[in-house]
Length: 171
Image (cartoon, rainbow, N blue to C red; front, side, top):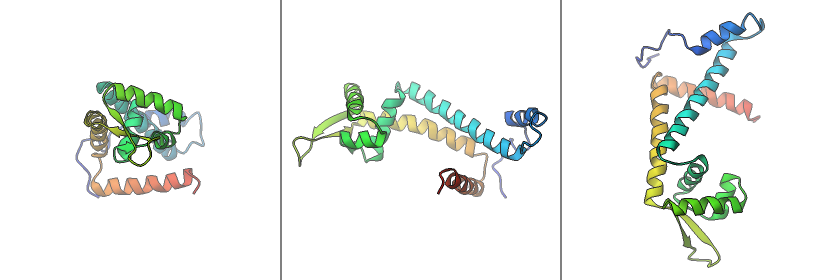
């Protein structure tokens, strides 16, 4: 199988030492399972830190980003009740988020054309740009680390992780 040539193949990582330290303490430890689970945890933590740095670089806090992200995922517009559902929050909490994002110029409220009692929340160009910038930083790092694998290996990894998640989700 073709690998991306990044010089990492055959090198040890932090997890190798972790597994070696625990094998004498836990003789029944499966080093392959421990290694895989620990590496997934470490990679998840690494990507979380990159995401937090990208949010800081764009002066966003996590709730602001999450709200912009849900709006972007709905094509840039949603009702406050749709956002509350998507974010699993009480409507009053969403109102506060929308207020803060509106003050920053990232969203605007527009009246519904079909029901005067309703409003729609729309991403502004500025809101879309700041959301996109934060997303691009994380995407670049995801591509960088997965670039250690060939396209076929990335596809295989994706398929294997899906099988694991189906079991974890109890489906």
